[in-house]
Length: 178
Image 1 (cartoon, rainbow, N blue to C red):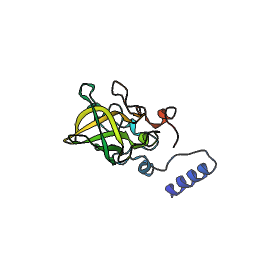
Image 2 (cartoon, rainbow, N blue to C red):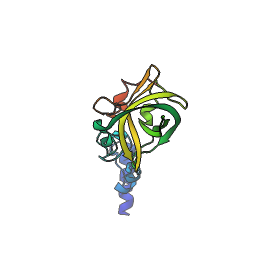
Image 3 (cartoon, rainbow, N blue to C red):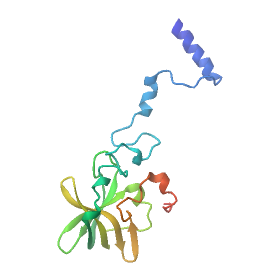
């Protein structure tokens, strides 16, 4: 009987706007939980804990090394979606055929790449500047800049800081709408 009265009191209070809380902590829990590799609702991927995501302090971003910067020229054989490391949203990378090898070139998160004016496609001749690294035990280049003719897809500054640092909300002034 007591539970019934408490429930009725809550219903009445909710009905007149006096109380706006969940009945139990467990009832509110499911919407607050995040899935593995995804940020909590309402937060950009760059707010993930250190080690996760495309954020500035993530394990992936710390791989970029200005001491290992190389320039390569070649033809794009493939443009693919990838998830470079666990806990990251998908991004894009290129397979670029040079005179001597095929190189995996990591560009950046999809939400950033898809909003850029410069579009890279199969068959394009490109000049790429980026840091030579090892990702998942395979050689790769994390691109800072991709030149396609006179067009330039700028991804990082001269220190290796990604231009998407700060997340989508902070990029709105720098990016063109889709």
